[in-house]
Length: 150
Image 1 (cartoon, one colour):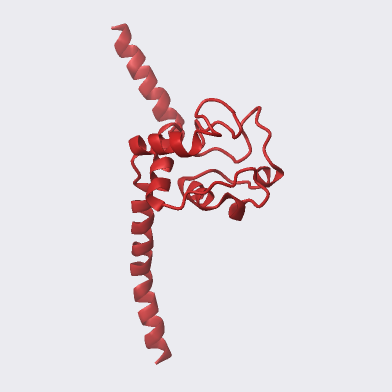
Image 2 (tube, rainbow, N blue to C red):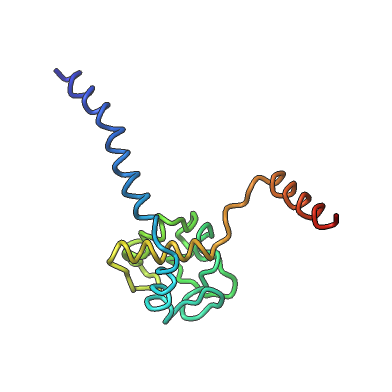
């Protein structure tokens, strides 16, 4: 009987993962155009994409280490975070910065998951993509340069 329960759990596990993955994909599928307007209205009082203000600049935030923008005086709470700002971590941050990093300077949260997803999609759009394989990038650059010289 215990074996049957374990068997059911093993069979149900992939389905549960699919539901969670689908929810995360839907959450990550924000609209960067709407996100820009949300960012400017919600975040723009303290942040800018290209300049440090009350908060640090956000260009390139996706994939960056917390507490790493030159010239910005981060709280010790943010400097201790470690890791990288991923879209999932930014979602967690925007749900409640003090829950993620008690003592952070930021207190504003964004309760609406759709608005968070839009803001994060915008931030991702102003962040460089992950570095491609070095050889492929250089090969493409040589090909483009060679084509331009012809």
